[in-house]
Image (cartoon, rainbow over all chains, first blue to last red):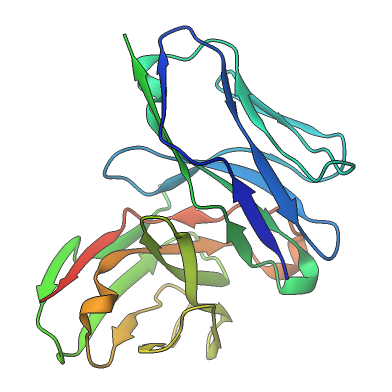
Length: 113
Length: 116
């Protein structure tokens, strides 16, 4: 069945450091891929998405490229800020499973000044 | 502005009691979902609905039920609350199925439920 695996946290970085959060997936068809962000005490918000192979999603300085050959969708940011401290979830959705979303376990990021 | 709300935001109950968590969306979305969030498990799907009178079981549906009598609401009921159901519950909605796989889900703020 479909599943998403993302790197274990927590991750602690200094401000302006480079961020990578790894995400790999298993899917039976051709999924769309997403990164969601959850700030403390809030629900999840869509950060970026990609709908087909080689697409790059980007938002707020974050980027992720849909790599079909490695079944990956790693999240990157060149220079993190304290305000990026949150939990990040990788997710997939595909039509042959009724467009259900499958989420990874989440990666907690803390950015220190 | 359209939104999705959940109530209550916090709830403490006792083992064996029936509990209902409310979810209301003003997006006019056909699809609605309930998840629970637990450390080490991420979000797990409890139940979902693709429209009025439609309900489906998700990965962790035992002990939970939902009903969809209108487009806006999908209440989640715990028939007889258990300590294992202590969790944070999120409701989400998305646009209709036919619009392709990339429709994002919009999430509510969550309900923190404690079962003593």
